[in-house]
Length: 330
Image (cartoon, rainbow, N blue to C red):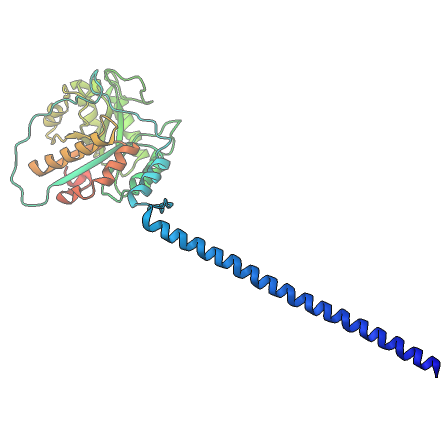
């Protein structure tokens, strides 16, 4: 009996101690939960106060906020494209006698004509040689005429690029009075008829669809009557018309073409004598004014970034004229 009583006491002691343990754990858990709630409430209240303070501050003080990035305009995107597409372009600028292009030779004033249809403006983009230039011009979505230089070692794909176009011109290198960076296979005033004719036949093979040629440089060549006679004879034999880029006031093209019974057609305005955009925009307006006064005009530019950007920014101005390929004027 004594043993049973001892066991019962031990069991009671164990049960009591277990109960105390569980009670202690339970109370600790409740305390932890209460502490969490109180802490959360405290920080939440503080946070709320902070926001209230900020709101109050904004009523009385200007709060510096991070400005939203402006939406990228269409023109900005075009500028980026042109910067990328024309980065490798090395200018083969025209020369005019011994001057930079700031003072182009004067042309005989045209008679102001009365016209019923919308005035026509043909814009020729000279010096086309690379795929990047072609892409940049096409991204303008303007009806302009690309004039391709003949292929050379550094730029061998100009004829292949032209083959993909429905209409194009060839920008034929001719001897200049003063020009250092001369293109290979430039026509010279002392070239024989056979040599010039052979050159034009080669051009026709390279550019089968060519119907118009304008001169690249050529102040010396176009001012030589004999050389121009040989050239126009060769062009006629291949059914190609000549557009005078008018790089010299002494050009013999009007006289020679008249002798062949052909119309003299020449550039009216150079767009990018200077390559700063304000100047080019001014020249574009000048070309439009000439077209309005005389019914038609021809402007020449190059695939410079600023030239192409200026053309893009002038789309509203072009509503006053009809942009056409050169074959709609001559």
